[in-house]
Image (cartoon, rainbow, N blue to C red; front, side, top):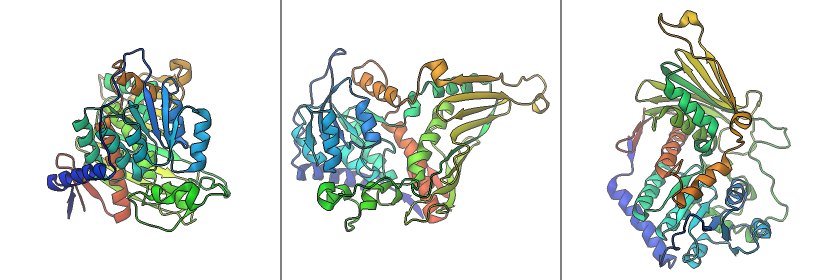
Length: 422
């Protein structure tokens, strides 16, 4: 059976989003006036915790004029830093009431809320920065792409390796041909933790209740459940709100390999794994292995385990003339292939090593990625990760999740936006 959001269904869902905007009494009004390169932007944020908080901090050079979080306590903490910002617990109300004041919106919610928040902001004429993954489903990606096209606004997705100088250098080396023909890459992310601190089991405040968390707004369009503190604070562990490893970690690394090699989509994925280390009621796996086949004789092997942290995380491209290794977002190595394995007349890749701090004066590139977004809004730069690139990365994650959950290999037709199982 083939699965595709056909044009009629796609337009129907887009119309439904428009109807929701009417139901929320949305009046696009006027967009905030365009800024000169020397003026500050007015920023509103939806979500204030963890990555969302880091994203807000990355825009401290601008005016943070509105904050939204369904959690009363988290909103209060964020407001202590941004005392002048207006506070909201419903993003719809914030976007409606602040429509004439804000230039851009930062979306740092659980994955299942990305599409409703971003599409509403776009329909109100706002630029958007959305944390990765772009969406909770493949279909939502097409809705967002249409909203971006119709709005004409700029949209950045938070796969921050696109703004990393280490990965820019990796792309330069790859394009130079130094590695020779590359048909195989592998990426991995290994974590561990003590029994008292399971992976993704974030701390839960003792006073959390349905009122101060506003559990109904958290659920949004997800299936109804009774108040569940685990689902609320540890939402990455549940399919209703997350794609698990595939959309939290995998998309960063397949996107990095796309960036380096210039690829955009795979043609098939087979993903296996399970809950092998943390049998604590979670729904998503803590261990996976996925194999991605690409249209032009290229393969990515991907693995994650939350039971051992020795190897850390990284990406490796294995060429006929050399191997490139990027470790822990900080070091890039190139190792020459042994001359015995190289055809006559060809030379192995030169040995190289670059460190992000020492050679590029850059640590984690999150702030630079946000700076790129701000500069793009001021017409000083092009976006490093526009919506289409974020969608392409998200699709790899969604396909891996589909394969895992259905225990079948999944095939992707990029031209048709269609997938089917073996």
